[in-house]
Image (tube, rainbow, N blue to C red; front, side):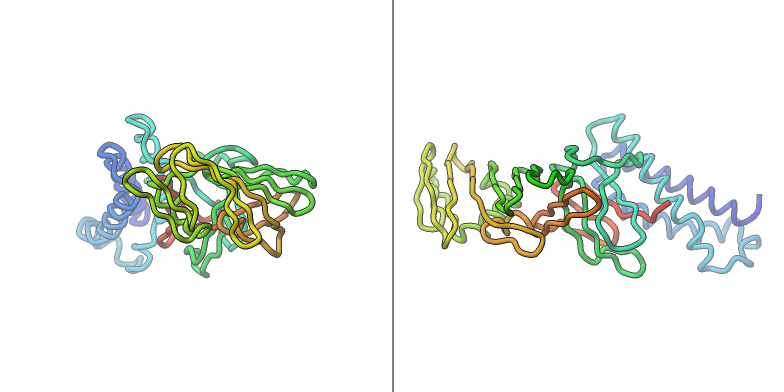
Length: 292
């Protein structure tokens, strides 16, 4: 076995071991990826001690790069297999992209998530803006469906979105005041939100108690609100939205609408958090990988 093969298979074995360990002790994605990076870079000095003479001609940079893509795949495949065997694990999806654009999500087994197929807490597509070295610069998550022309219905997390031919959009959903993501959205709609200890809820200037319903006027918008129980409300509203303009309050739920190749993509107004090639959406993760 030549020097290049030695370091390739050694790195593959170590990455698989990290995936096994991460799955068995239920590491979070950021912790598991951090452990992978640590061991990935440790392989080089260990390899130099084991096969120093054989590796001299490769050069240090070639040694560090050897087996990078395969190591990432080995990590993810073993990690996913283990967490699926030992417990519910952490949902992870991938996007294979070599440039910026709109892409459907894929499972770890490379199965493309189809239109209207529920996954990733209600998202099945992403809009990526990548740097020249394929790192995430900006990202939107959303969902896509066949463009029927006169009526399209999708779900964005807890929000049902219905887009009609006349560019009217119906927004409705049930939201929790204890959920940080829901609260970001609701603050964008109502501004002031206060939940008192006795269960009374103040939305903008409207006071509600559990069981109340009200139509709240905010500028030209009318929002139907039902206060179901302490900290749980439902909203229903209509607005105008198209590919060039999304009016309030739809802009608290939708950031962009794109028609492409017979499909319509609707992206959430709230962005996920990301680092380099991994984005987090609630307790699920999206990993950007190079195309095959």
